[in-house]
Length: 444
Image (cartoon, rainbow, N blue to C red; front, side, top):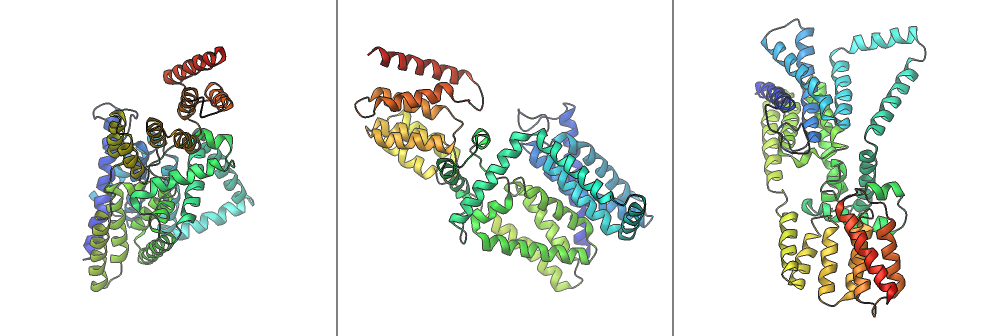
């Protein structure tokens, strides 16, 4: 039974090596990428989770290398793990995933400190003798590196901070039970709409706002989906198993868990089955370190049970397909049917375009005040978009008997003056049409 833990370790090492080679082939053009926008994705569709998977495998490889080196056993296992370590180390910078880099740094320090605790303490003493303020120097270096990492992708970092703030507010609305896995995006969209409608947001937050499928923080994602008690229970189990693994010398698996835990703080690894399976495998390795047959059998049962639970709790509804069906109904003039389906779609999607189509449906039904409300909601949900203001201009211009002229002027001013997130031909065309509408109204 103890060999199962070793097998699981080596499965992750070999998987990490395969992913690194896969990415290397993509860089040199020998293998196709999974997403046309990125030159490097591995077997994933995005370099972010690809970097996270490599970061999770890195400490396991590092532990194998250090363990064999310390015990002077440089056999085949040593060289395979060393090659995997080097390949992963080469590919990690290319992913441009700052979270993966941080995860590797923290987990590597943990593994090195666990394998060579005496040497690390001795190094600390020597540094203290040579430089009394070496800890301050290290802290300043970390702050400098952190600042550089933030400035490297400032909008991306600000966007994640906004998502965490909005997600925390969404958690407070359903702290005990959550909203369910498939309704997390919808709950996020509602919370973001309320946040921007409150007027408390900054201009930078409005600029970086989006309609995410995930909240880029698995801890908040779990709390939103299942509630704070479920999150606390999961963390308690993971911490206990981590401590068991550490106490029994399973530093590689613990390093992998630590790396995954850091990466999960600023990404969405558990939306991929590869991460879920690996996470369960690492927990099983930690639990099987306890040298009791009944505990090891229980570890395998735990892994099987978690796998079954996850497989039966995957989201069943596809927001994009639902939106496309609703949009087709809208184009066919089936406005009420389209609206009903879009309101269901809102529960599982944060996309502001849903609100725009609902507004257009109400406009088609002759319910102009309701149409205005939905367009305004869209401007709050995603304030950096010009399209809902354009729809408001057309609504006000077509029904001057329902809306005062001042509303048309205000909406037109937003279309003409608001800085878009991305300049495009569509925006220029909308502005030209709004200019024609305003000039026509002045001539009347």
